[in-house]
Amino acid sequence: MTPLPRDQFPAVNRWAYLNHAGICPLPVSSVEAMHRQALEVSLDGEFTYAAHSAAIERVRTSAATLMGVPSRDVAFVKNTSTGLGFVANGLDWSPGDRVVIPDFEFPSTLFPWLALADRGVVVDRVRGSLTTEAFAETIAAGPPPKLVVTSWVQFGHGRRVDLAALSRVCREVGALFCVDVIQGLGVIPARLEEWGVDFAMADGHKWLLGPQGCGVLYVRESCLDLLRPLEPGWNSVAHREEWDNLDYVPDSTARRLEGGMPNVAGIVGLGASIELLLAAGAEEIWSHVDGLCERIRDGFSEIGATVLSEPGAAYRSGIVSVRVGDLPMPLLAERLKARGIACSARSGGLRISPHGYTTEDEIDRLIVAVREILG
Ligand SMILES: Cc1ncc(COP(=O)(O)O)c(C=O)c1O
Image 1 (cartoon, rainbow, N blue to C red):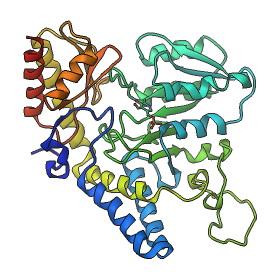
Image 2 (image 1 turned 90 degrees about the vertical axis):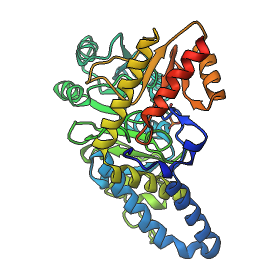
Image 3 (image 1 turned 180 degrees about the vertical axis):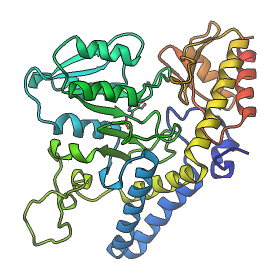
């Protein structure tokens, strides 16, 4: 038995699907929720809106539960990049303000800060292994940064950053703390508020098992007024749907960042996926995936691979990256695809990312296939 029900994932009939760090296959309940919403609008147009609006608020609550934050602090956004952009462009910067960020990041996690160069913002990179000490050293090497940014889990080799420890370092120097959580949320239990994260964002299409282009942004209540809402619209104000009231009074919750019509189909689809995750239990999913990842590390070590992901319990995530044999890793990923095994090649490694419905048999199938391909 897997924590997530396999009959929710038709992809298992075609693939050993080990690429949740890329794009997940959608569960049946998510597809059905989106289909139902579209069908209802096809029949009743605007008369569906009140019910769909109430559904959106329920999804906000479940997303907040999964993130470990209050629901009033969650806004729906188009994707992770948009969430990062709301923080980068919403904060008030002065020339010389510092941002500290890991040296190697996913492009979307880095670019919003580099794009602030014309406002005099200085970006300092943390080199080498992403220990809390390495962050602290970079932070201490200059004036106190205005913001520290990191991915919770690095997209390439899957190294997890200790958010609670890093947030303490941020607090000591008065820095805000922004975390791209897309590579962790949905597979590793999250307590973002308790850990001291100020801003966090993720799209649905990886570990959340949701549709593409529908994500969540967390803004700690005490930080909300620090962000200028970049897309004010009818949905951003306290008195939304009072169409003749033209006073601009931003809503007191993170919803002020949602300008106009939300992506209703996407949000209800995401909601169904999050319900699956909550029903399975965050701890159960993580313990299952962590066990599968250990099997991946052991299996690849036995066939002489180099495991690029750090094995320490504090650093582990749902991603295991390995280098094996003489083939370029993208070619190996292609050969595996031809055998019905979905992985990806990133950062010089074969990136393997199972989820809560993956079986040990599927991991064993991967190892056997790699052994056969490499002869
Ligand atoms: C760390 C990280 N951030 C962001 C993204 C994707 O960003 P978006 O949701 O804007 O497409 C990825 C996708 O691979 C990622 O690994």
